[in-house]
Length: 156
View 1 (tube, rainbow, N blue to C red):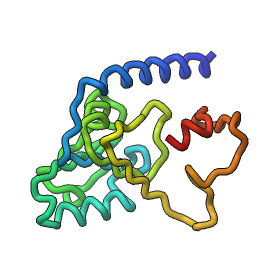
View 2 (view 1 turned 30 degrees about the vertical axis):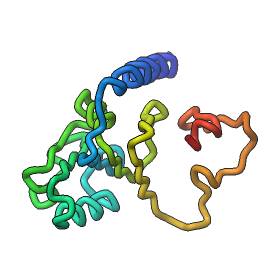
View 3 (view 1 turned 135 degrees about the horizontal axis):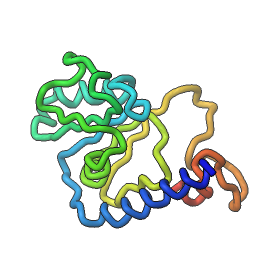
View 4 (view 1 turned 45 degrees about the horizontal axis):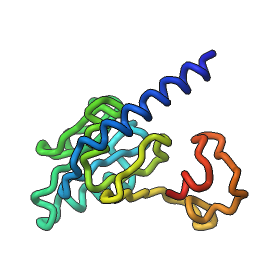
C-alpha cells in the first residue's frame, strides 16, 4: 500500500514538474547547489561554490543552495547574498527549472530532467573503477531498481 501511494505521489510530482518547467525560462547566471539530498552544505558542491563566490568572474551570478533544514548550515558556510531554499519545495522546483547550472553530489529523482540548455555537473567521487551513467553495460530492457529508469533514460 505504501509503495503504491509513494509511486502515485512521485508520478504526480513528475507530471507537475514536466508541465511547470516549460513555463520557467533558464537564467544563464543562476547556479543551484545540492549536497547529499539537502542534508548539508558540504563536499564538492561546497568547494565549487566557494571557488565561484570568491572569483570575480562570477560576481553577477546568483547562487542557490537547496537544503532540508536551514539550520544545517553555518553562517560561515554561505555568504549572505546566497539564496537558501528548502529541498523538494516549490522553490526547489522553480530553481531546478530556472538554474543554468546544477551542481549536485547525489542522485536525482527520475522526474528531475534538465532542459537542453541546462548543464548538470555531477560531482560523485570514489574509485575510478565504478561504472556510472554512460559506462554501464546492461541489456536494453534493464530497469534500475532504485530509480526505475531504463538504460536510455539513465543516459539521457
